[in-house]
Image 1 (cartoon, rainbow, N blue to C red):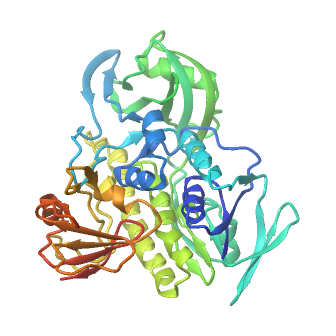
Image 2 (tube, rainbow, N blue to C red):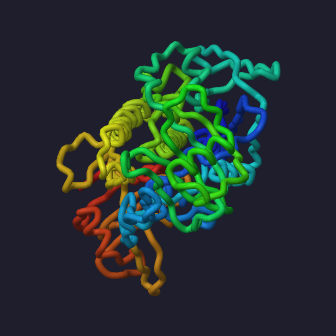
Image 3 (tube, helix red, strand yellow):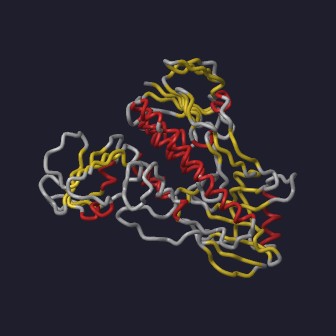
Length: 461
C-alpha cells in the first residue's frame, strides 16, 4: 500500500508518522519551499498530549513546551488582577495530562519531522500537488516538480485553501468575517517578565487592548491585538506603537519580530471528508477561530483516527472516518465560535476554558448514557501492578500501532496477540488494577477491544 499526503503541517506529519510506523509506504509533500516559522497553533490540548505519547514524541514536546501562563491584567498602567484560562489541576490515573501545554506550531512541526525521519521518511518541501484523478484501483497525482505517481490513497492535509478539496469540488461551508481583524506576531519584549502573560488596556475600554503571551524556547511573546484599520502593515514599528498606546510608553521595548500576520475569522466545514480513495483532514476539512485552541488539535485527532484505518485497508473502517471526525469537527467549531462571540460581546469571562476544549470528551458513541463506557469512547489510562510488584500503565501497554484486548478477571487463556488481563489482585497471568475496574465500569468476565487510536471498539459483557 502507498499513501500520498499533501500538506506537511501537524496533521500531515502526524498521519505520516502513524502510517510509517505501521510499515506503510508514505510520501509527504508540501508546496511551501521552506518550513513554517511562527507560533500559530501554539496550544496543545490534553488529548493531543496522549496521542503524542503513543507516537513517541511527548517527552520532547514536554521538554520544549511550557504550561499555560497566568495573565496579568494591567489597566491604565496599573496591575488589576491575575487571570488563568483554566485552573492547574493534578494528573489523575485515568487522565495523566490534564493541563494544556504551550508550544509554538513551528516547534511542534520540527519535533514531528524529526520523529518521521526515524522511519526513513522526509518531508518534500517545494513539491505541490497540482492535480489528480482516481479510479477504483488508485489515485494518479501530478506534482509541481513534473512527477506523476500512482498511489492507493491520497490525503489532503493542505490547509484552508486545499487543492485536494477544490479539485474534488467539495463545498467549504461557513463564513469569513472581514469586520474582525487581529494583528498577530512573535516578538521579544524587554521590560516584561517572560514567566507571565499580559493584557494591557485602557480603563475607557478594558476589553480592547494588547495581549502578550510568552513563547517557549527563548524570550519571545506572541503579540495580539484587534485592528480597526484595513491598511496596517504588521511591522515592528506598528507593534511598538500599539504597545505604547495600551501599556504606556517605556513599559516594553519590542525587538526581534520574526513572524507577523493579520488574521480574519474564517469558520468553515467541508461538506464531506471523503471522496472514494481521497480523504480530507485538518484545515482542509475544517477551519477554526483561535479561541479555544482547537484547530491544530482537531487536525492531529483527524490524522490519528485515519492512520490505522488506512493501514487496515478495510472498507468498513474507512467508511467510519467521515461520520466520526466530521461530527466532532462540527461540535468543536461550535465551541470555538461560541468563545469568539463572548469576546465580541465583551464578556469578562471570555478567557475561561472548560473541559470541552481539552478534547478528552471526544466520543464516537451512539449510546446516550454517559455513565457507561461504550463503543466509541476514549479508553482511560490506569495504573497496573504485576505479580512481581512492577508498575506500569494501560497507556504504556496500548502504545504502538496494534489494537489491544482488555480482559477483566478472565476465566480462560486468551489468543489475541495483544491481550492485557486485569484482576482485582495480582496473579501470575494478570495485572492488578482495582482502578481499571472502576474507570471502565467493568465486572469479572468483561472484555473490551481497544482500537489503535485509544478508543473502545467493542464491548463484551
